[in-house]
Image 1 (tube, rainbow, N blue to C red):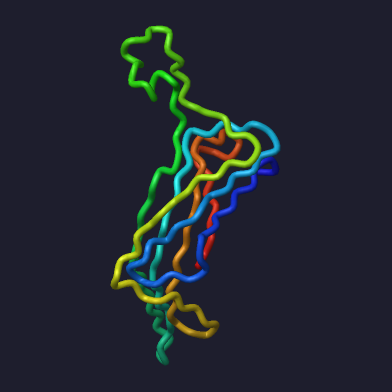
Image 2: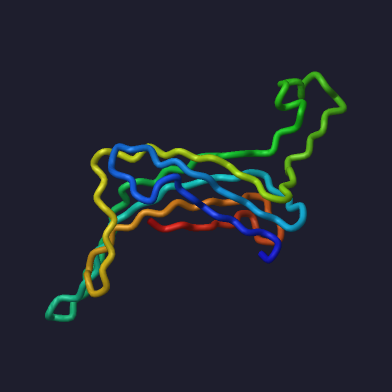
Length: 151
């Protein structure tokens, strides 16, 4: 979408198993956009794919980590004050608007037994991790739009 730029940035370039990955999702818009929520997801897997001498193809995938967190969701003032059942004139809108530059912090705890990232052309094995951000409620993009950052 031309009116939205999303960046996923970590505080450090390298993390080791057991550490906490911290960073930010930056959303920059040139005009107000309707958004229900902002979520971040940490995903990592190993994939193996090769063909043996008899031309039989083997493929397998194992997920190491798959964790998602909600970084922000739209709330009315009545919801924040827990007064929605009391205030009959409450704003029941479910979508908020983001404009300008917004920052949302995230933190994911890495498991201790994780494998190191690995990718080499010609190798049948790849170990990749990614942090993705999703914006729910962007009507022009569909129910959810995902922005990825690989590590």
